[in-house]
Image (cartoon, rainbow over all chains, first blue to last red; front, side, top):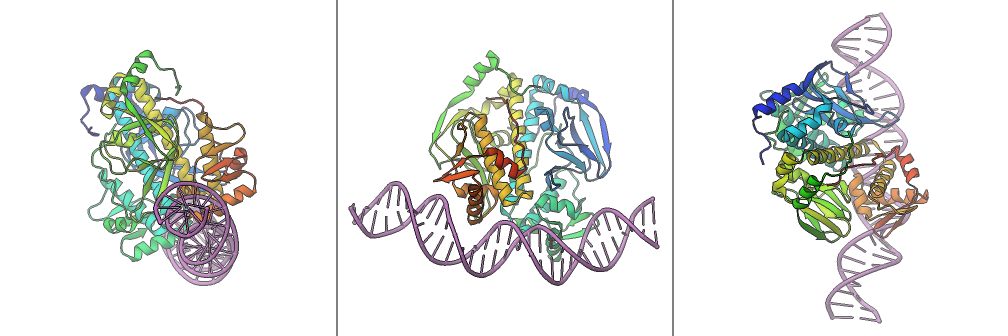
Length: 230
Length: 230
DNA sequence: CGCCCTGTTGATCTTTATCAACTATCGTGG
DNA sequence: CCACGATAGTTGATAAAGATCAACAGGGCG
């Protein structure tokens, strides 16, 4: 069952009519907030963002990152209410879909409906791996996993540099993803730096040796090649 | 957009033709293994199970629990390979679907296709909350969250007792879900026991005060009422 | 200039892991 | 019948990982 296939002309026609506009957001701006009803459905056209949840006292957990091609707001569109927030990590361009036509998509374009499910299953896999990381990997392993994971994702959408890749993150983002304090995160990243696997610049991480990171993490990569793009 | 609706007679006819049999499993038996290709697609008819991943050195992380009505093996069916394993927590009955007819489901029964996506989005929500738990809650909060979470899920499928609910888990399962050592898990559960919120029996947890657990966890519950059942 | 944000580092405290020893229960084979 | 090992749970002592506190450096920007 191939996950990536060329769109039929019918599908292309529908997809372009399905779009209702574009949304441009600056670094740090909120795209969607937890609890919002009638959330829109988007895809990322360019840029980086992340999804997160917070506890009442302010502790924040980053759940996953959003890169070009990713759906944003599917939970809200399907279930009716967002239970997480989304924020831009870089200048971001989103394609806005008409949420109330999602049932039309399933009705008239089953291939696209399948693609949406495929994307949801893919998100589930990433969350599974993140859970394994938070639950059972050490701080160093977690950091190595996260950075190699983001590197692979960037490479999959053509955002990897030749040789090294730059990730637009602050150490606070890394800490909130790994479930660590910011101080300990700093010391852990420093260790990776001392091993010549990464170099930290202001609000960005240059990954020098992805294979080295993967080895520390004990992670083989998701090995994703082809995927549907809505 | 209602998430639960009566099936049309067409859908009912398809769903029953879609089934290819039942699978009965004993407590502790493996249903699906990581890496399996051409995995089947199932739903749980009765009993409890859990999904998990392991690192090469054996560290195990439980990702989520499976109760009646849950889909099993969707990732494998949609993407083509399982990346986690599934094991029965109690005597378990599964309904086996014909995986190769999944595209037919999307093509001819868009409402059912939407329901599958709805279930995937729901799984995503649960994983989001688990991530928040592992990343940002303390051991006591995590344990309280897990037990109240399982209690709510049991109640949603009519498996809650009147007053108290019994969860068929060992402390090892709890430890592997919370990302804690078994010794620390034991001490943490003991604290919940001393607060009269739970009572631990042999390989099962009796939840006495769900509201108390939720308060400790700082969790309001998923508040799920209606859902599609395939 | 001064302030805020990001990153850095050392000292100390807390949480959680590890180690070890012990109890109770259950099923199996002698 | 008992001895045996295997599985679950319990508890205290100690070690390690990570959190918290505090102080400081550099850059950007009002």
